[in-house]
Length: 305
Image: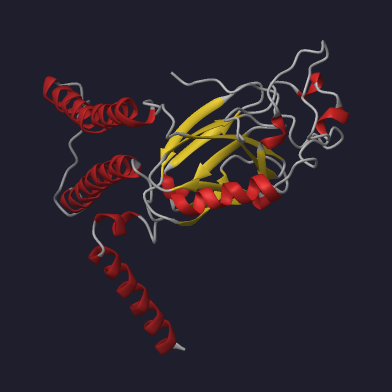
């Protein structure tokens, strides 16, 4: 039994040493999600800097505690000296240490974060190259909607549509006053599966059907909350193809753990083929269910400034 325990202990130490061989990331994370986004390295840099500085300070404090415990331990002939700690010297040291921590952690992290926000995450892309997707989470699934051939999403409110017209693809759509508007029947609607092309910016607009959710893409280092009554937006760009996880990062009910989806990043050619296939074979008359309310989006796409 002792041999087994010793062998397991040695194996654990060996694995820890292997983390150090991987570089700085290996110290802080065990197999972190692979970064496949254009700006994911910005998030990684902030986290890595924070962990490094905090680890250094933590090490200094621990070493200082060990030193003082040894130096001022109880021993024969040693008499304790009490100090109120209000001398100018002690105040100056305390202030200096506080400022050092403040400038090396708070100020630097704030500077890095705002730089990244201004240069990347707040700088929403525009133009024909942008892929626009609406996301509507609900307990406990992800709904995704793409604009169809007209490059416009369906009407702002489904309450203005006659249900018979929704299920009739041949007729033009009119509102309650008989005014025509764009046809939503070519919109592509998916559940728990999202497709995007590689090396193209993707803008997400999100609003929940029910409670608060959080749209999280670990491999892209992006996350955005879906808050009832609000339409939030974010953007990202994939630099590698593959299939990646979509997770909900907000506790949203007793089946929160089931709320997972997959993000398929594919080449431009494969993405266009997928779009064509969806237009021919994708959902048409099952995307509007007034009883289930699955795709009552209830908002209009707004261009992000």
